[in-house]
Length: 340
Image (tube, rainbow, N blue to C red; front, side):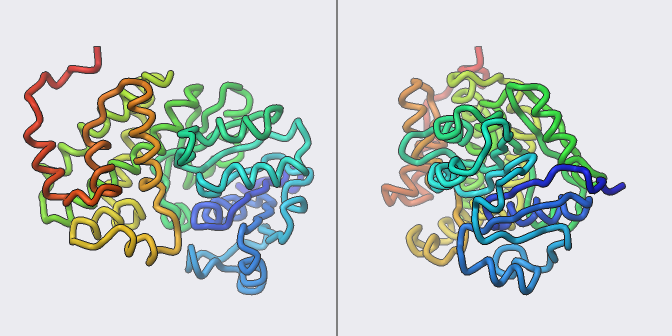
């Protein structure tokens, strides 16, 4: 059943594949949506063609979706403002939105990354710029093209304010998009960010021609690393067994649609990172997140060998085959070590 016209307008900042997919999802449910593209040239094309041909072709914008050219127009009076922008641009967009947001307006981050320089989670970035806004995050195994296609999908809304996580749940939940709630904001955000690192590794594994054994080991031990760092940063370990941790890890490591997987696959086949990134029209968050995560691991004295070796592949020109050999020849240890 579609929502009534009395439902509040939802503002979505960012018209990449994910922001567009959420606009399509909400619009199909009868929600009034204001979609603001960061790139000025997108405004005219989206308004005229009613389709994001660059980032999400084949998913027409419902009539309920209004494309806005000004950020103030998009957020003014909105019942919820969704930040769907890359991690490196989050602070700049938040500063723009701050000029137009009322302190009572709730905001939602759907980005999956860490700020490259500080290592801050996106909710930390938003809180620093918008300290009075009620804040939530949304994360999970949510490939944009599948959400836009109406394929059954689940996600997690997390906030320290239970009422806000339930508001997000109510706003997005529909027959094709089931939303759970969680109070562990740190764990939900870190799961969505850190799994991108492991997805690059999964792509490298496939690019090198390795098999399912290798990928299973990579994902399992990668999840252990994610959990160790998360707990050290204040997250709850069980969160990493849920949708925003294990669930998102499985989807991203297995899907050729994942930008991070694609980067890894091409690295495994011998391409240079600079050429790969230059050829992409969207950001693979796992690349800058690897650098931020390795710095966080050092700060919190957490061992993350997979992330550390991927850092060497990405930024120190270490051949992928050499990184794999070094990981396989690390000193023997108990599987449970690091969990006690």
